[in-house]
Length: 220
Image 1: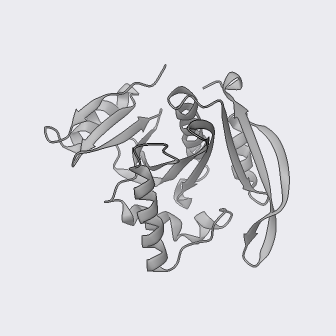
Image 2 (image 1 turned 180 degrees about the horizontal axis):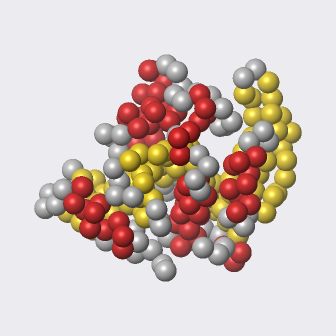
């Protein structure tokens, strides 16, 4: 089923009520909060809301977690200044109106009350033409091994193809992270290559695996 857009003025309904009303309908929703539209995506078990300025603690819980960031492209953020800088940049990119290059989401279970991690889409451009989307996912350790990462990645890819109309979606991982590679394979992605010593982690260089899928290959 194709995702749909709806606009809800939250001055007339609180966010909790909206989550309860729309979660089970599988809709893509744009929620108006303080004159800013926040996009909401839903999947079978999960609820995605664009990262908002009130989500700093959520952001910190992910990007300062050593287990979560062990194989990530960038290092664990331990300094408060660094965390504030990263969060502010994510919020600014999320609010871009033209040639938007990044979509950052807070991810929740069920009705939006239990935070489990974040996800993102990075868009590459040539001039004003969108070329590719790269998806990423960062889940808190207590939610690993439950199929959530695959569900998150699948929702991000679906949004890229059905709503952003991209023709190609990619994902990458540290070669030492077979669980992330497994997620890419479950999405039907094909391995494009292994990039030698492309990631610097914990004082040494690691190889990077890159996968992709084309719009004509995509099956939700």
